[in-house]
Length: 453
Image (cartoon, rainbow, N blue to C red; front, side, top):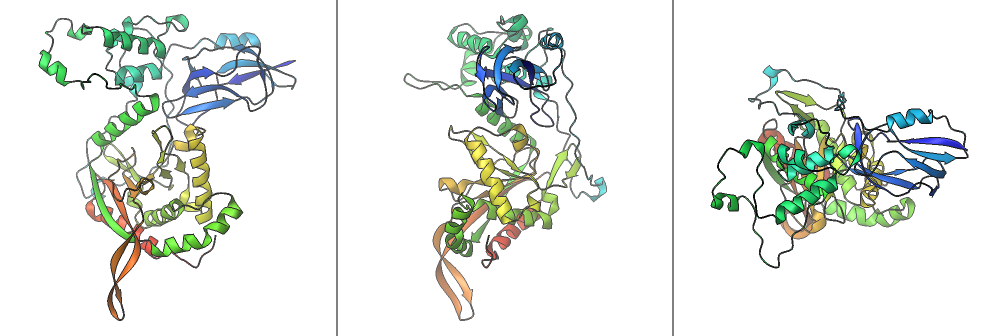
């Protein structure tokens, strides 16, 4: 019997560690190749880790809620296959999590810096790029996982309170369950908990304290936000604080596209095995418009503008649990319509089945949100940072429209849709934002209805 060392997989260029959420197998269990052994979480997404070999799970080296660096050995599997492994003694030495902070790897991306004299606006102050872990200073030598720090920040747990929580994890480490238990006890306690900085100061008046929290009445249901909802809430607030949001709108005649799709969608599904939606058509039009107006495909770094080489389109996707995630179609400008349809369908399936990896949601440069799916005609979406713009596509509805013909104006029933373009006014002025959404509308209205895919 050989021993295979299962390691924490790489989950994106900027991901250097992950938290073990749960083990689906226990020592002694028989494992088949591709069986899901454990579930892990990063600050971006939850992922399932399959086994690359068949065998018997001999040893688990980390417990639930432990934070493990990528490439760290997390379990030993006995297998009949001959595999190259490190000595078992070395594995055990690595099994103890290091308490020193792992220095975050720098993500290198190609930058085109626009000279300051070419920018026709006053640039904003530099946005603080400090990661969350660094924004929550610790007052002791205790190690806290990113998950614990995120909960502490969301629930306004002070450093002194966090240091005082008794940990039940390895080496007395504070786990997620320890923090949640502390929060439950704090909510049920009539006394206010104060941190070290507040110890020698007077408490706020009762009226101000009561106004700082939402009140609940008898019969109200109190629902604890799950991890993803807390991340969404934090990201939305940070985006509004960072970007100066402004929106432009335009109405589009989708009649030709609707009729074209109705004509080919049956044969398309038989051939490809999935439905042809409008999203790849929207994506293609936006990609073309980005090529015409590349200063939409940018991000901001302090007082510098980063003009992106690649066009990576994020597709905002609603999950069955009510949460939202944005998988990214990489290099969308290099795909034809059927390529876009295939890529979008695959990402949607992975999102619905909770199989997205961190790399699937990284690197977006522009985002589309299809609010028409819910019957909405207009919306003003929030920009996903560090992008500077997002397009919302509304529901396609029939309505009477005045058309100009050679014989004069006529009223006809047409399939119409609104496009809502929200952009960061720090770097995108109204002229650019308005011309961009108009160009997208022009590409949609001039769609080639003779093409076949």
